[in-house]
Length: 72
Image 1: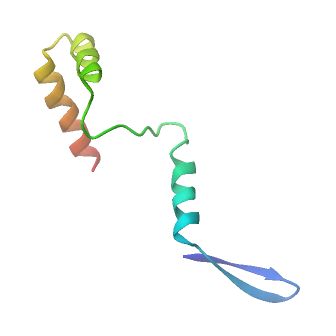
Image 2: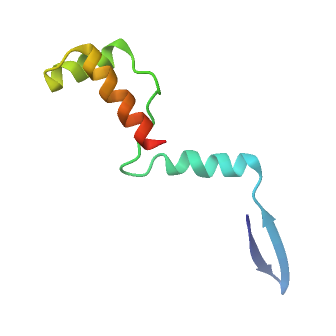
């Protein structure tokens, strides 16, 4: 939850506030390999997926849902 820091031979407990925890999470989202995407794709995302996969938009939507559900 927090770290203990030694300052002038005094132990100081550093507690994580909700804001510092949130900032740590936002920073981690910038790590390579991590991407934030909406849980509901835009029409443009579905069209791009359909073109790339050579499938209908409906199939692209099912594929997208499956990937999101697998990540949860």
